[in-house]
Image (cartoon, rainbow, N blue to C red; front, side):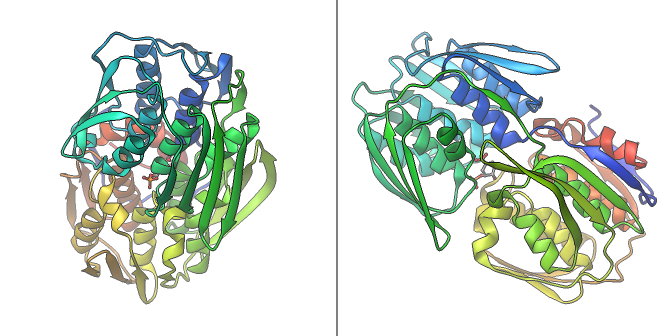
Amino acid sequence: MKKTVLINERIKTFNKIINVPGDKSLSIRFVLIGSQAIGKSVAKNLLISEDVLSALNLIKKLGINYKLNKNYCEIYGKGFNGFNFKNNSIINAGNSGTLARLIVGLLINSKNTVILKGDKSLSKRDFSRIIKPMQMFGLNIKSNNSKLPLVIKGTEYSRPINYTESKGSAQVKSCILLAAMKTPGITKINSVASRDHTEKLFINLNLPIKIKKKNNFEYINLNGNKNFKGFNYNIPGDISSSSFFIVLTLLSKKSKILIKNVNVSKSRTGVIDILKIMNAKIYIKNKRIYKGENIADILVKSSNRLKAINCPAKMNSRAIDEFLLIFLVCSLAKGVSKFKNIGELRNKETDRLKFANNFLKKIGIKTKINKDNLKIYGNPNLKLNKTYEIKNFDKDHRACMVSIIAALVFGGKWKINDVDSINTSFPKFISILKKIGAKIH
Ligand code: S3P
């Protein structure tokens, strides 16, 4: 993929049906959980992107084989003690926070020492959030001031823990769940609600998990050390990838899109709920359930009466990856939008709160940041005709894709750098945009 793109014109009216690639969270979980099954697991529609390829390379380095082709991916798991690697092996999670956090849970009983590394952006991110609970399980783990590289050695005697997860981080919750899965006894997690794909997979594998949900909190008990056999999984489309097309359509003139076969489970659809409150025309069609996940087609129509939102903080973790897009919509909405306690955005591939603030200022939108709160003063008449360059975003794939959407709906002349970052989550992004009619050079 080219490293820089130029966009000099808005997208014209469109009416299309598209599919987006498989869900990234589910693809990474399939690879990691499949590596612990006894026997072969098979996924259809696995996302083929750099983050998922990093997950496949990583389990291979730990001694688990796989086969990947266009139609399916097979993982040949060998049970909880199946990892087999030389002492001081180096594993690399690339750009993926999800992979880096979740793999640590699976290393709870590793006999040899393993060193976990990542790319430049991942090496700036915080790992104290998982180091603490993992040490409570008995894992030996050293870090570079809570950052990568981590030096990890498992324990024969991991013990179940009681843990309160207060960030609403599914990565932390899942890391704990994976360690608990391999630890005899009952681990208890009290967690601010976050995406629950790991729990749903465990239920499908008949693992002894109990979950109660109350007031945006989840109370989870998992009785560990119960083996499971290989499994099949048809991975649905990714709502986070769909969201770029949802917002593109909302902000384009007289356009319409139908996005087929998307995971619209509640823990992921904060973006739809928030945009609907803002008067967006989004309709969920053809609803069905697959292995506990809600799947549907999403119909979106151009929406020109958008109004500002005072976003309830309890929606934050359900929209965590979509805030940059939501902020774009706010910049055209009537009134002042308000977001509270969105500090977790600072801990992503780049500081997304800082990026959003700089970006909105660049396109002439007034904002106010106060600690972890953001106000956006919308301008329904916003039209751009200057030249804009987007760079210095730590190669954050979502910052890059959101800039491309902005260029296509707001007008002006844009140069967007580090476009290869998109390969981490959505390599087909630009080709789908071109099919809809976008002129991207
Ligand atoms: C993910 C959880 C979220 C999200 C990330 C994927 C997951 O991170 O931002 O892109 O698959 O569990 P946090 O749980 O740390 O907020």
